[in-house]
Image (cartoon, rainbow, N blue to C red; front, side):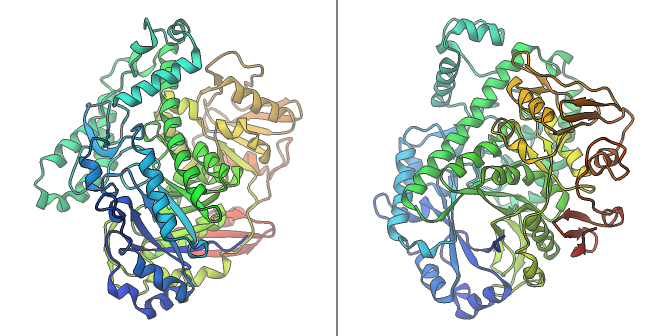
Length: 616
């Protein structure tokens, strides 16, 4: 494995501070192990005046990078409010995303804006013509949408000036609706077919509407609160807003659910198909938009690594289909940067492993980013995560002091290395370890998540517990259909019910050729579209032979993941299959651990250190 790039954020908005352009600062970066510096390169900054491009904001940094043997990571952003020129906002070509929940505009451009693509191509072309040396770049990042540039729809985030934004369904403009109607027409051909499947009564395709969506209680209340706080007091409410988003709001949502009718919580099969078609179209629209950016960037940068920036928690309304985005990036020889890590390993793992697994299977490059600013111990954790994931790059905001940042409340002395940089230096030698031995995958039930969004949180919760016992990848239905299930010996189904018949048949065929399929609790795989050519049913606590493979379901009274992991390791040889290479229990009692060929890499989440053990 090649040593991953170590990227430090250097420039957000406007000129780089003079203190960060001193020669000794660049040499300090190299001493810490930093290999590249990143700039937010926005269309708004380059073309403040229409038709008069200006690169003076970025030239001073670029001029110094080559002299010091460092690379550049430009983050090309257009579409988010802050990254789009004022003149475009004021023009008739601007089209803001509109949410279905309230019918209100954001200040973020709609991805269905038909007048936007030509400007995106122009923006990338301007940048490529001005900075035309491939050796300058480490990676070229693409910021295609979302609050800050991620390939997701609007969500919560810090804004100036404040505007309407929340997690939800942002397809309320006329071009989005027209695209949905065309998609349904192309897929089904006749309106009678649609009505029969959805159990609706549309007379023609132009009558089709989006399915009803529930307005988010927590989103509405948080938005109302923020909009009525005086501008000069809003910084003092940032912590409270975070509390509302993470804990209070979701608790209110759960309380409101208790008052909903049972029929709303368990929709009939017609409504399931209606919701599924809508959600797939919504996610695919974001993937197509990302693909346009990727292909455009590859046209102008044929030699460089190009990565799509994405984020979120893979919720349906975010629009982030991680395997779809990874496949699109791989098709142009690019990759993905995911932006949702923090200082907690278990949470960072569950939020990024699906995207990481997709990049591994589709052979796309993959790098990670923390959502805020890592503490020093978080840097150590992310090094462990990067090695065990197989990243091509690790991006940080706090290895070198850049003052206060818009991404976190920590402020470091400008031009000074931090304690996080010292942790990086401590573990630099192990960054080039070979890939780990991971033959276990957890199934991410994306069809079930699209029709029953609560499934996602249950999967994440169980994955978080399982990771203390075993390292694993995650694969969804696209990866199953594309044959990547063949890369694994075990597939664990932790939650979910609905699946496409095609994916279920592929899983059944994999088991018949020797795969081991393990079910947790009441998890099932039921075809949502038509009868599957193969089916698998196992009673609790039982194991059945299925061709050359096996299927097993854990006992009903299982409360933890120990028995699931025990079936995978099969240390006592009580099952008919061969377990994976062992990690001793005494290590797992203290560490998160990953097995390599002859080594075990372990992370202590209490003392925040990485250790290496010889494998048995």
